[in-house]
Image (cartoon, rainbow, N blue to C red; front, side):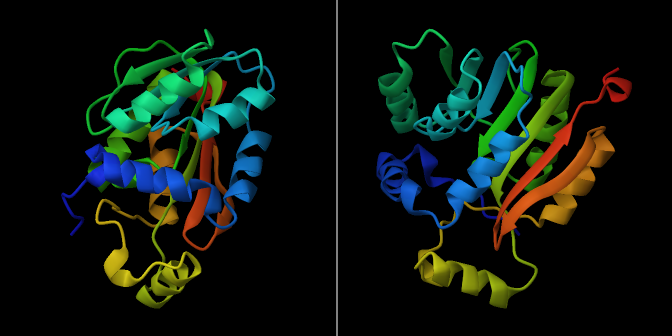
Length: 216
């Protein structure tokens, strides 16, 4: 049973993540693959659980003409976002808890996320995926660089070892789910070209497209 714990409102927890964010093994490989699947002419992009804006900065390098909406609920992350992008008219920062339905923000050519959605309960994950589908413009894409579950406890512990994390140190906010389940959900919701585009142990890039025939 997934835990109800969510430590991300804690400044200490958020700052600890920011100190470790650049050292996550193979993260740059997943991010590079995410950039490959962005629409070449994306003009409006939504980032869910933006943190300090690492993913926005990367996507801006690939889509310099795009405008961005960054969502996060952590006061620490909102402060970091405003420090990093407060003078950038192309980035709008909105405080929002993904446990609640997405606000009305208009349509997007891409919705992206990096290591955020796994903090939601599984039913809320699926609800959010449906909300993302509705928020996408025709031919828009959803790209979720995510922490997923391992198929066995042995593999999960091996993953933790690679991150130098003891089992008792694991973040209780995590509510991990196997990628196959999430891929099935995306297809049921209506996404096309759904796949796990990249994976290293428990890190995976899940994606899908809102094709014209499925946009109604």
